[in-house]
Length: 90
Image (cartoon, rainbow, N blue to C red; front, side, top):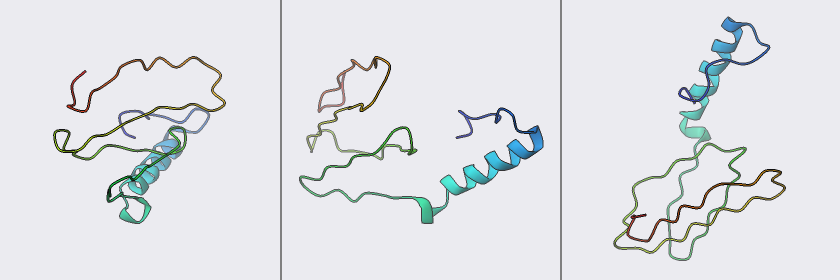
């Protein structure tokens, strides 16, 4: 979060920094982290508005992967036209 969150609007600076620190610590706490252990035919879905996520190393040459972005109730046009092949190249 540190690179994306600097202050909380409407909250005193010291209070905001303390809250940001607490939230950052929670994102690094293993009890709040879900790590998926992939098996053949798995599908994982998450809400980008509510969940922080990141990728882990993936063997692009060994396994196929399909990624589909879906927006439900989105009021703005999304601009995600980039397609990445199974080899990891654009």
